[in-house]
Length: 140
Image 1 (cartoon, rainbow, N blue to C red):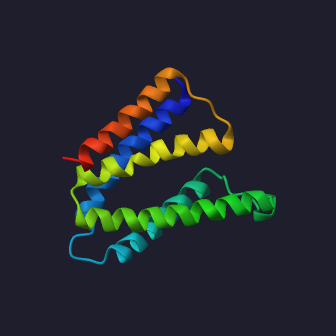
Image 2 (cartoon, rainbow, N blue to C red):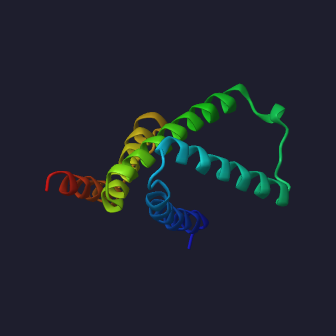
């Protein structure tokens, strides 16, 4: 089994737990404040991980391009988390999780357009199945 698959599968497991914990965690509090708390926890976990694994790097090792795209990625992550928690407060977990995973389709489309990645027939079919699942949910 490829290493990337193991990490992707673990990401899916943790994302599923995130959905359940988020739904329970945003009950009776402001979703933006809940996102703030979540962000602090993520930062503390990363500080611990980088410290234990001795993976700290000097900030000077980052190029301007690294900085630009990491900042843009961080901004996109922050906006995604804010919208995710608002959606979890208003909707059901299965609804929010499925629509949130539409990001997979958008990421694939953007990777094809901007990164020149290519899809085979099986991958195109998988994308179509995700899209059809989202449409089935939206148009009951």
